[in-house]
Figure 1 (cartoon, helix red, strand yellow):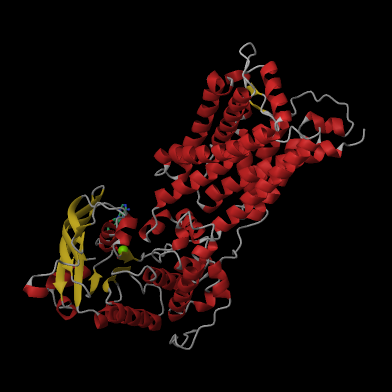
Figure 2: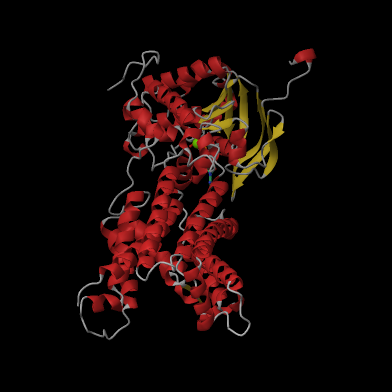
Length: 259
Length: 359
Ligand SMILES: Nc1ncnc2c1ncn2[C@@H]1O[C@H](COP(=O)(O)OP(=O)(O)OP(=O)(O)O)[C@@H](O)[C@H]1O
Ligand SMILES: [Mg+2]
């Protein structure tokens, strides 16, 4: 409730969002909302439409129908970089690293308002060098927290699969998000490190008030950290509630067993 | 026959400088931003036409434009040349204005011509731009008011026409090399800046770049404007060197020369463009009849030597792609501010680094 008891607009709101690929209804009428500061898990069997939902929210695909608002503004007609500018950042399930760059350079792509990215400033280093040094130090700390400092100078293609995944997540956090959508951040990562990734999520949430939606197959880890899960099945939201209740829900159990 | 170096060196140096600018421009577009602008020759010709049209018309007006002499024919050209020889200030000023105009018009045309193509994938963009280049040449051939159509436009003086013979070519060669060196430094700075990183992100994964806030079509528009402005400057420099504009100089081979230089030297490596430009200058030179003459060989090959250039260019692309797909010099870790900071960085104790799991 906002001042005077008026309801605040939802942070992220989806209304009857649909996306199909040929005959496949990947997202089939999703209506839901996320409040500011929430940490929501998004689960569901393979192919249930979780990643597609992220793709639609971040402008990778325009939805076929429905509307998406972020902090009160329609975003479903915007280009991906405009949605990013509003504060929605995501990571990819299969890391999409910039292959012709080093690890540290990958982490330096998302930071906002880089003076040196503007063509008029680029050839004049003194207009952007100080900012670049600060951003680089920030990025190096983020890499160190994710155990990537040893490979910071390597090409992004030279690191292990687990490290690629960690870089994928670290890079997303460099985008100073308001809403961070993480697509299976711990897939392929040792279980100890998986816990650490979730601890980072909790820390970012506490220190910076970030809002998270996390797709995750490792339910045993996820359920320790989230207070709300959305369960998707065949493009629809089947369940929305506490994780303890999800495992008891007959429809959810069916969806998973019916795989 | 003794080799006349006072003639040969300026020729090679000028050619090298012009090729270097073309290679740098293609490398920025393709090597750094992933946009294979195979219409390079079109933007080169835009600069050539701009420089030729401006210089000849203004000189003509300054020289008094006699009504009984044909502007586009030899006597008209002679009047322009004569005026330039006795007016150093005028021709140098015109040269500077022509170069700036070429850069600005080239950049604007680069942005516009690429605009409808900006949302195309790289390979489609390449095909659209080859077509644009050929269409441009056909237009130039058939549109006399611009630069004489199929007859061309003679009488673009060397900016140093007022110097003694030979010294004019030497001075011009030095100027071209200086401009090329400036372009080289500009290209290095641009690609080592955060703007360069933005270009690489679009090149490596356009979708991921977009999701991380990069307006990819805008970035492509910017780099095609820069690259086209540079190519136009190269075209203008060429025109002041050969002292005429001639539509059929602007054949697709020039675009492919740009590709060859970059692929041979190494994509996204500016040092590679030096290798590429040196190589192309040599190929160009040894496949001209003048080379045989210099060697004292009195042999008329039973074929057009120009075709050897096409052959060699094609052969080099194939050989390099087969045996050294990254070129002679591969893309290296670059000397950016970020890399320097990262190299000397020590993880501070304040970053509570979790115990390493080396298992
Ligand atoms: N670009 C695409 N083109 C065609 N079909 C697609 C595309 N993207 C997703 N799909 C299909 O949409 C459905 C939902 O896929 P999605 O990747 O969203 O599932 P998911 O819940 O993320 O699955 P997983 O847990 O395996 O990652 C699947 O049937 C998939 O094959
Ligand atoms: Mg998925």
